[in-house]
Length: 296
Ligand SMILES: NC(=O)c1ccc[n+]([C@@H]2O[C@H](COP(=O)([O-])OP(=O)(O)OC[C@H]3O[C@@H](n4cnc5c(N)ncnc54)[C@H](OP(=O)(O)O)[C@@H]3O)[C@@H](O)[C@H]2O)c1
Image 1 (cartoon, rainbow, N blue to C red):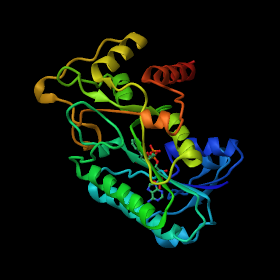
Image 2 (cartoon, rainbow, N blue to C red):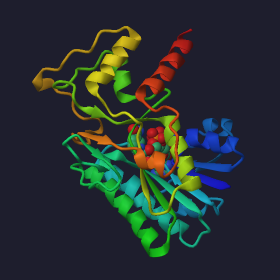
Image 3 (cartoon, rainbow, N blue to C red):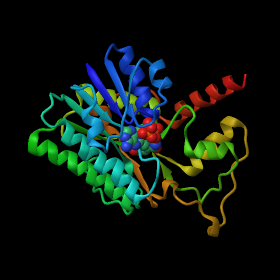
Image 4 (cartoon, rainbow, N blue to C red):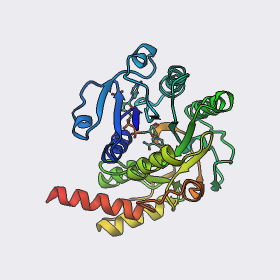
């Protein structure tokens, strides 16, 4: 299959490697011209900006599978609007009338604004408190509307906090001894290993039902307290201190405080995806082993 990965970064490259190994013809698009990593992985690098129609019409299409995994590297609403909403709109325009079989968009579990600790599934309300979250909801709606109106073959994945080789917000803060546990550490983390994001995108390309939404999170939402306790025991380090009320940790990415457990039942039962790293324990054990072996 001819595949285009738009926004070929941390996740896109991992996905590209799998697709190349399976014998697909894989193109990776991003703005940056330095493409050695893509070439090494056997992808065909393309330089361009998804928000610029003239860049898209120059691409060597048609493609049967398109993945939009572009991420805004800035956090503000304007950057989000450009990358996610306008970027997706420009892809939709460019792809209309092309013989596309599947389009996968990596949305985020930040579309769920729940603060009551409830289990959220794909049918749960998406009413995020943050402006950036609302832009992601609008982007999803644009794709679902295109599916309803012209059978655009969009599948939406709502991805939890991604970690993996070299990545992991709280893990890296923990290693740098920068964590202060807010209140009693009851805040819940929903996580997913990078390789499972790539695996879920592949499953969605192969078997995802157009017009459907799937959460992509692992089996075990975990509280800050339980997560840091596991890291402390595993790495033989002290538990991080508790924060004084006035120095409570702000939410990463300024996305606003949410408290929810993201269900992955639909991913497993309907998409038939089997997680490689069912919980943070397997995923971070692999990362700790990788870091140890690098240190020799
Ligand atoms: N990280 C998380 O925890 C998380 C959680 C939920 C969902 N997600 C979503 O998962 C997806 C993959 O994330 P990631 O961690 O792989 O992101 P990443 O490593 O930042 O990669 C994003 C890629 O998009 C490219 N890009 C950005 N703007 C572009 C534009 N206008 N035109 C073309 N390419 C563009 C970037 O390269 P250039 O800058 O060179 O263009 C980069 O290669 C994203 O959609 C993200 O929103 C991430």
